[in-house]
Image (cartoon, rainbow, N blue to C red):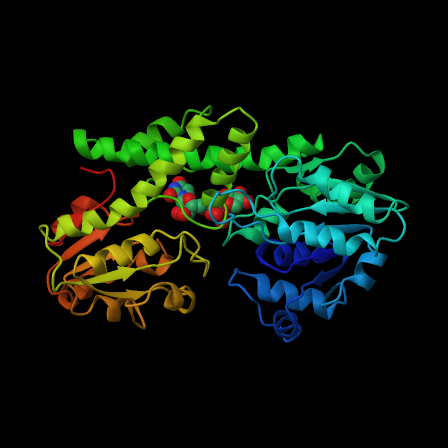
Length: 434
Ligand code: UDX
């Protein structure tokens, strides 16, 4: 199959490279000429484990190419994927669809022969209808079908999520489109991945429902964590105790500083807006959004408390800035709330993150960036673990203790064990463990 992938952001690039690796012929298109030039040189615009090698191998084998112009790729394509951003619109939280609709307008004139136009971007219910209307208005003669095919890729694990997904969701009522989509995902037959065909609106909603449910699950365990602290229980055991019930499941029950990233905050908000516009509010999701926002803001208080209520003139070492490990993505990361709050309370913040510091430098003015975890810890009054990068899991704690002015750790990801930390002479605070 021939694929044109419009947009080489996170989703477009990973999906394009994986489709090529499946044996399809893929052209990834992006207006950003610098980005395309760098991709031609093998330089990835994002940090994602395994991506660079995957791209290099498929470029070498001639299945993957890059272009700034879409004409040729779209005309030749069996499927054109729209994988451009849908950020939160400033002011109202609705998904901003201007990039998606601009692509629809642009490709309309280029379609040649039966073409499936697939939305990979996360788009509100009804967007597929609008894309169809836009293309039809510009090209009454075109032979095409618009399909919804949401992505469920986790950053840091995106390639394996693409190649070994729990399921693929395809929203279409068009039989010919169904055949093309089945062919595109045929390599997944090997692991017996269910391909769920639904109506287009249903598929669009599945994406939001999935993300909202996961956000809700995290928020639930975060509230349980606070309750555990108040009543002297252990949230990790609570999570295990409920997670072994197959109806609940053990995943996404890790309590922490609140969810961040490119999807959950944006998609939950967009769902809230869609639902309230449709006159069918999703109050659980509304509450989840506000609890999570408040939680991220409240995390700095835990550091203040660990230093007996006063941060003036103190130095805080932050380990981890990205919203989760194995990514350089800073979008809606808890660090964006925590670091400014600490500085506002009078502290100097010195930080280290294995991949996120380049981006963080623009977003966190005033923070002093260090070369490694021990550099960050040196001379600080407290060390805070904000992101559970593997390299923070086995820190040399004796060294950390020697480098700190006082042996205080606030572990917002429950990387270490309270009894062990206390035995080592640390004053230790974590999440949901008495
Ligand atoms: C998410 C979805 O998992 C993915 O299916 C969707 O397509 C895009 O959004 P991603 O944002 O990359 O993926 O990261 P994910 O691993 O889901 O984590 C999201 C946030 O939740 C992170 O801030 C993470 O730290 C937090 N989280 C996750 C928890 O606090 N506890 C958990 O148990 C799981």
